Length: 598
Image (cartoon, rainbow, N blue to C red; front, top):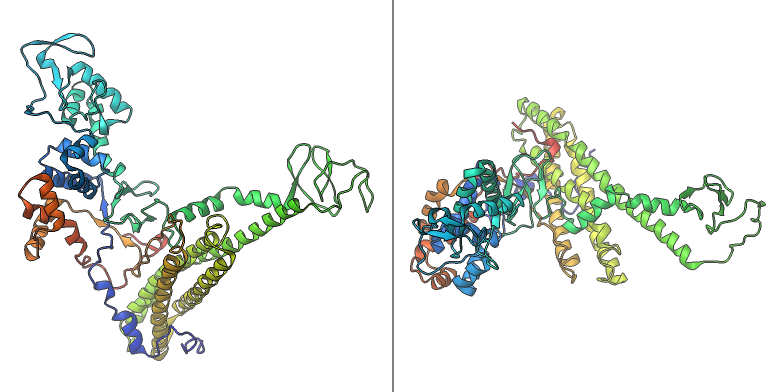
């Protein structure tokens, strides 16, 4: 124990208590404003979904002077990406923006969708003459009777096309007014009208690449919204941590493609097939796999067919201790032997990485029980007459342990695919692969060793130790917390720059490393509640017209550049703000098993 407390064997250790305090307790990096790359993650509940949708609708309605259903049509077409919508507006203009989304505006068009009420008009769908008040005209100018419109709307809603119901006219792609759809359908089928409204509301999530449902089971009913970068890992208010990009469990430093392949490899029968290939031979008659249970190389299947275990060829049953009657297979068959050896080597390689992945996953589950133990030891230690009164180092070290254990666990599936032949066979030479593998495994082993040390010190019964021994454990925990954080950062930098960064295949992106853990989503506040705060931010800072805003004004031909600037800068200002005051210095995430909801 005393040897382990010396702290001289690792270069990442600090030499004194004061230096260790400077390393983690006084680290102010977590209190800095979020950078422009940081994600602002929000939880959207059923209650706040409408407010979240209206926030984006309001931005488009105010900028383009549109009705709500026209703004919704534009946003659904551009997958609720307001910035992309504005970019198209600047580059191609209003006409191209509207026509691409199916919006058609007639010159001098009346706001009323009805036609002349007094005259009798003919409907081109049912070929019936109906009074003018039973006809409805859409924005595109086409008029049909209300009965035909209602039938058309009913079919489209039942087919799941509520979000983009087009006009009935031949070759007309104009989107129908959602208010007209709602009015006509609700007269005969109120339930269908409610279904239509629900589809429109949920389109904010279904069609929005920056908003996704929480994949919890059973479903918690929440959605998560991120800003700027969808390549991130988030934690819902229900406690589930997941990858926002692929909606699987958080798997960094694995890429989404790697994790999906690994998950299938672990849970389907792919490795069972490998085992069967290595340990069994197919019967030449019924083709069922046969496992050898004795020393004789003449094997008999359940179908009573005899065959040679060495070559798999069908034979008779007569044989001696040295040979099978009428059969000889002593000649070397290179392709078959290579296939068997390759299958055996692949299985051994998979088991190497899988065993270590599972070992760290199991350790993480067992260490989750440390949460209660640490709180109990801290509570007892605070009541003792000790010189040390602050035990936050223990909880911070525990959080760091959870985070780094997760990184190590998922680093093994990453290494399995990074240095195997399945994904990058043609991307690296054999020598290059060996150099990169040695570099990565050196960092992996350093991280693994320090994590095990941190786990050991946190399990010590420091609530029963004297002052000097508690102080020594404190120094070690703080030093190791800094060490594993530094090593995690270096591993991610190695993956991003030295391993994946040099490859031409750019589909394997990983979530950036966060020292303070997976970001927890905060409650969404509607724009109405935050409007005054945003206004104060714009007043207290430089809200001058930017180049982007000027280009928008030119595209729109309007002069309200100052209002547009404040509106378009809203998210950027919020992203640059500080985290809420409840965030602690080392707000690392506990595994789901260790979180206690109050």
